[in-house]
Length: 375
Image (tube, rainbow, N blue to C red; front, side, top):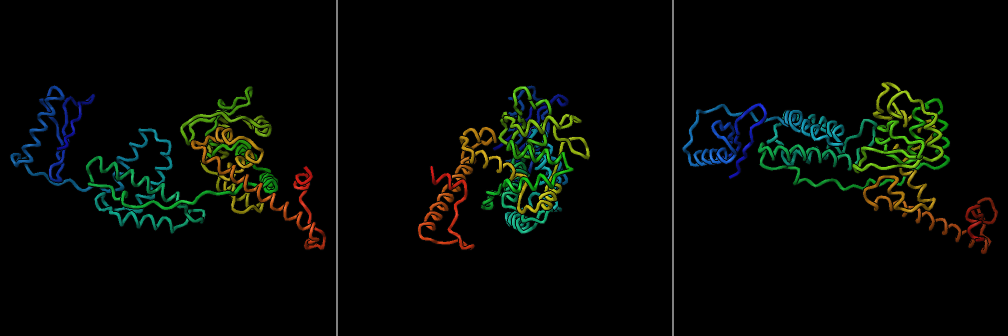
């Protein structure tokens, strides 16, 4: 026996009961109850009468089964917004995708097979930028769907959440792509005349800040006297301070203060929302392939690791919640060192054996490795 008793609110002065007997939901007011104990006692008696067939109210028209889309828009999203969930904007976007896919279906009509169909359809479809949708993206959508159906279970609208029987996709989304120094020169040249975007790119390369952190940055969080940038509303829900490099300070000092945002939208003057298209066009103009804006964060991390900066320090600057995320940059650095030493060893062997290169000259060692071999 599960009976919910809701206390009186500011408007209504009555206690309310809410319970289910044999799949039928009963709700109503207990008007004569003066305290919680009386309300509970009255609700338990009512439940007992219904359960034993002694309660015969006038027959009511059965309530229509709630549609999935109505529940999402009327219950799930308002609750997420009230709780000020960080990912509300993304959840709202995903909710639109879900409502479109499950249009016309009631909550009870959504089965495990429907969830599997949704998972496959999303994985097989392309993004609006004509890219393959990643497993991580589909898993985020499944997480929102599961959140909606869990809430429906809590409200006793469905008996169970079918998403719990659906396996998430295996993710292998780790990218080792980063911007080379030559690519950086070409990208900066392509960004001439687009100062607003160039500044955002410089910020990403020289701080490792996430896209959303850069977009949300406001002038009151830029401390020139201490040379620090205070980052709020982060992915890990922990504020952090990021030191300014010389390049970042120079860029920020030139940045016009036309808005409370450090990098306002050139169209609205408010917060930037998306730069995929202009960033993609700049990469195309610079003849740079397979580079995403988030790879600039990888670039900052890789360069710090290459400079020998401690992994813990890198994690603090980047705001990683798990040090294991940062260690992959250190591993990449060690792998690069081993590769360099292999090249040095092969080059030395080539000289000793008289092996010549394609131009008929003895194998040459890169200048950096030449110094290393003499050390």
